[in-house]
Image (cartoon, one colour):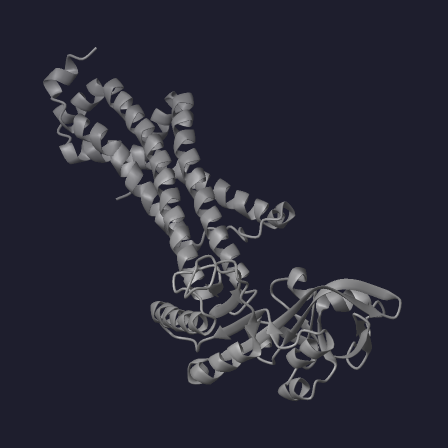
Length: 418
């Protein structure tokens, strides 16, 4: 029930101890401010990681090879394992029904690309049609490579937006124009954009068989890439992905005579498994941030509790008179709790608002620090509500012991207090 007299008492007490109340409020506000900033950073980390995974299909499984590290079946370590077309064909044939998208890849680093007087060095990759979905690419013009292009060794190319902007200064459509890749003419059939930004858009894709033939690769491959069908349940998707990865690894190691325990010869990157591990790490970091923030708030709450103890001590005679005139213990407890909760909530909301405004202010400037793993650090509504609940609980906790002490004051003792 609203009591004007109660509020007048609160403001009168605060006005008598402005500096003490202000410093106590600052300790609570700083605790909430730190908690909001830490939680905003953890959210930014999660957003940054999600943005990183958006560069490729979220459930992508990539295979590449290295050098053997252990002796196996009489073969010395140090053998370089080379992926071949038959590796892709075998995986495609054996796991065809389990796969969603699939592609082999042959890569040329630093391929010189020319168009009239413009030129640049870009990554040139021979791929199959599904690679568009493995890389989460969107076409802005034309089409992607198809199986006819690959089977007929056509000299066609799909270029990224950065390549387009660098080479086609007139900004006219690039489709059907001729570009030169390492001295060989290719016709542009499409332009793509990638959520990964310029780094991912500085590439040129050509049909796999064309790349192998034109650039003298034979039947060599640099990478295999697959995705499995999407699952509604994340844990089930991770389990299926891990099972497929294990089977594929075992098959390739047997095919290339590699020891089962050799992790450097056949390397498989599982995006879903990586995502699960990263999210688990972020969850731990978030819990740690909550602990630090709540501990800081607790330090502020201790300050509020101390000031309320001092106030109770100063008002001992007043409380004794109230009780002598018939004031109930609950009324005394309510008086102290009301004041402590008011101070805590006002200070806490101030820290909350300052923290949220600070995050809003700093968020646009994060890209200038070239941080790929923190993006849009914000505090969502659910976290804000949780913070408010913490404030209310903290205020009640801060006032409980002083209120309990005030309720136990005996009128006869209080009246003798000097």
